[in-house]
Length: 68
Image 1 (cartoon, rainbow, N blue to C red):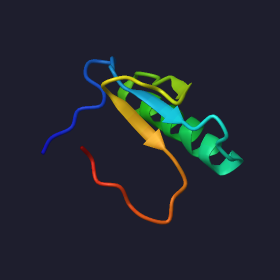
Image 2 (spheres, helix red, strand yellow):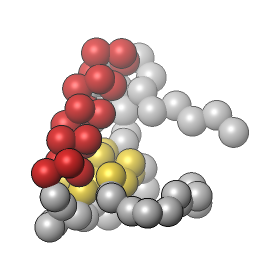
Image 3 (spheres, rainbow, N blue to C red):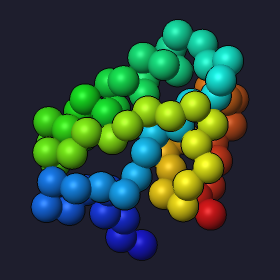
Image 4 (tube, helix red, strand yellow):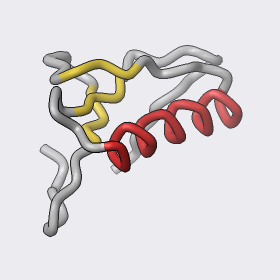
């Protein structure tokens, strides 16, 4: 499976965190946005509980989630 987060400096993805996200989750979202901008030229916005078709969910958990 190929997944293109950024193409030609643009992205349809957002980074989503929970409303009550703890500091490590917020930091992870900010770092991911920053690194993706450095790598691909697009800054992915960080939203609270995003409900969009293309979301990268940052959430602390003890188990891994499989993509839909």
